[in-house]
Image (cartoon, rainbow over all chains, first blue to last red):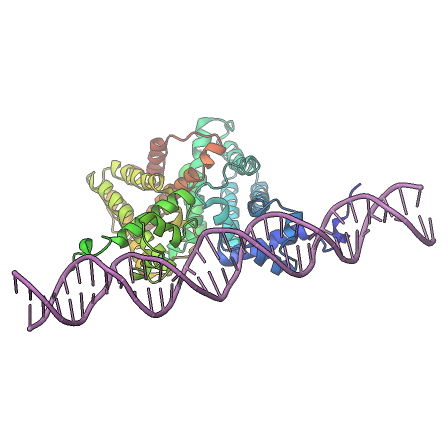
Length: 199
Length: 199
DNA sequence: TGTACATCAGTGAACGCGCGTTCACTGATGTAC
DNA sequence: TGTACATCAGTGAACGCGCGTTCACTGATGTAC
């Protein structure tokens, strides 16, 4: 019953379309893609996507979901690279977050910058919670408290904001405009020690 | 030689169009407006805007510029409400920033969330610098140092990021998703004291 | 193994739509004499 | 003050365009006997 989609006709069109859209978003901005253009990139007629997606919105959701998993893995990997309680863990987590934003600025803006257009989807919401849970875990380990301790959530949230805000300002080129050249590693360490002082 | 545009034909069409676009952006998102729709809202033919703007891009720039001035005034006003060095000044500045983002989420996303699409315009860049200068001023006053002191820029930038990131997470509904209910005033105070400890 | 059949991913042509921009124009306003 | 004229903001019709989606179809692949 398991079908090997690779050998049907085109190959794995679903993934190829998502990748094409991702690339269009990276080069033309979050709203700068069309199904038609993605089809051209994938070498397929404009009707083909409807075998795999309900409509345009459904394709976008697919792009966002896959980006979220990629980002989540990067964060989890960074957290796993250092033992619980080690301050380097927080710095590494920050680098992973900013690294993703730098690598995929268009998709990052799509995930977060649309004034909440996609936040109603339960599947996306769940993925988002998962990422925040990683931060919570790391902060809880650091403080030696439970993940639902108010002190933990407050500090984890502050950390998230500080790193998230930095990403946006970098991507928008505001750091160039204001002529401050930020040392990213120093910034992440400042933020980490500001919200999670060594006990 | 000074013309009273109010009494020409339509009145102040330029401003009315900018306002119409602003409202469309608020209700349909940063990219969800069209010139045609704005014309309908202003009760004017689709050719009329070209008396006042070069093209679509030029209209957008107008919307962003006016939003930036509005935001700048709000921030300046907040800073002026407390004497230099008073920690309340930083909290008030944060509230002004977040307040604008909450009041005009669509335009806020347009100003910052487009992955740097507009950051090349010198006029917009200048307005942006002006807003950061307000933060720098407040932080410099607080620390009793010069505005170009590296310690000042680093802390002002960190403050900016923390508040900016909070705005985006709020607008995207991430604060609902993650089920943490943030007390905004407490958050701003935490951030302020984290980066600008009482000396 | 060979054949007949079912499945279903992808085709290509067509649709209606709203868009940004242009054009020659109109007619209200302000100005010179 | 009255009139002839210049200015120029706004008109309305038209354009070409690319889009999202649909449709009946085709033909390669996998399956049952």
